[in-house]
Length: 114
Length: 113
Picture (cartoon, rainbow over the protein chains, first blue to last red):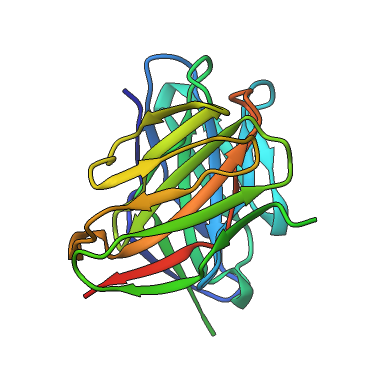
């Protein structure tokens, strides 16, 4: 069975500071990995995904994530936080051959302060 | 382009009542899903469907039922609502390939009192 662990349910950064949201996964086979963002009272929107190929993936709004198989990690980063980045972020995993059933982490609420 | 549409957006139910959460997608996706979101718990899969006429249980199916008579629609039925079903419900759809993301509706906020 697949699982996802997001360390830190709440992260607070200053505007302009580095954003680092952590995600570790467990999977018996190479997974597909996703980061979704949820703004208040909204649905989930895809930020970026890793399927195959280049391990550093770039997404929308200046976010990127690096797939590190040896560390079973897929941390999300952004060099400079903006107030508009305040939202909840979910890491998710699905498996090849298993359809698109996503297994989600518990989410990280990002707060951006002036 | 509508994507995934859920109705209603908000609903208050009394204990023991029943209701159907509607979900429709216009992307011709084979796969559809129902998730519930509870604070601090992430999203949990309730039911999913890989095509019309085919449904299967997810992680937390108890108290819910689904049907899939068309590619477009995937309603979620709550029978005998309980306070534990107070949650935000999301419907999603995706193509069958596992490397493609799921597209989510805006959610239905349900309160059972």
